[in-house]
Image (cartoon, rainbow, N blue to C red; front, side, top):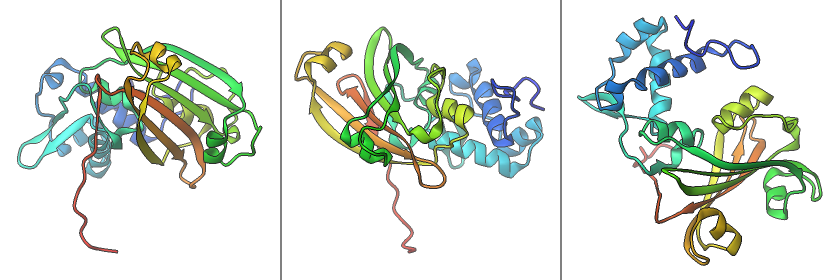
Length: 251
């Protein structure tokens, strides 16, 4: 059922079923009618179409809802989320795909990928000795010809990156294909900062302009750090959102 739907990764390895199902759904919702707001077929119809169980399809749709790409409403159905220039912080795994689902095409305006010695904060977050070199990826990203954010990611040396990785695609998908490391969860911190002269030049704002600094440490399924990142957002051009839900009282 997945002959033309992302069956194999770039290095020739067969992708796991859940990844192929997600890829198939992403291709489906890229069609004009779904981008225009049409409801997706129900879970059973989609499961039959792609030849998978209803549980597998429900899980795939659930992940896309968590990323903010799809939205569900009880008694209505599932459709592509339509909130451009806004990001839910639960969607950290694939910012570019989340925004694409909202009709916004992220552009990598510039990037720099080097093997360097991290600062003390990055070393501590990655739990590596001070002075240990690690790969650093800087990316300036935006849309409509305007820079929106600058991200700086440090990757743990344990991953075995070579410097030849192509980070034009979603970062955590690239990492998983290149190293086998799966981003499982992240610790996030947010603080308002003033733009330095360097950051102001990168983001095309005036020095001391207000920016939102988002720092996160991403962990694999074993709880080991794989990335520490600092992302500066132009707060006047972009909004981060957080949806909270009342707990059920269980320990």
